[in-house]
Image 1 (cartoon, helix red, strand yellow):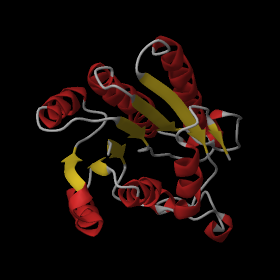
Image 2: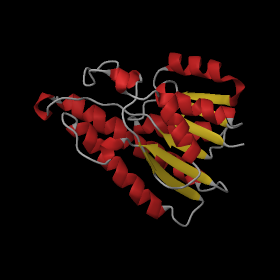
Image 3: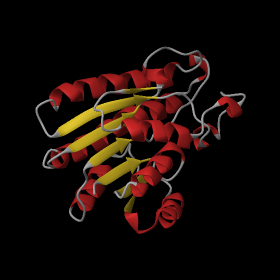
Length: 219
């Protein structure tokens, strides 16, 4: 039995992954910003969801303190960096706040959490870090310049972390998946027809079934 910490685990892909880990006999810890959604997800997952953490990934001090507290009660074997957000449109339409929100959440938040957990993960006999990046980390896309920039940054982060952790007990991989029909798009009209998007459970199954290969997952 392993313990998996999943960011953005209350809804969408993160929640579908949590369900699969629980079905596999593992324990999960969910991290997110919305405490009400976290509590609902924990109730649905049952006793295999051993903890939830309500935290803002962009708040370095808060996040590190909450991870220190969490690790005093629980061990973590797998970190799934899934949480992310996006603003879309022509570059000239972005405000500074919109740019900061995308970069701070997708890039800095992932780096902050990984840094906070890495020393602990390296004490485990076998541990892994899986970062959900999306195909936006592979090529440019119209009206997604800032979002794509954040995903390219994550790609570089994971590639570097692979080398850094090469001779440790921690393996690092990334999943490059396309758009899904999740709450991610609730406040955006960037996708006109969400029916053409994959259901998160379908994507979660692909990721889960390939999670042990130690190779990046392409979809």
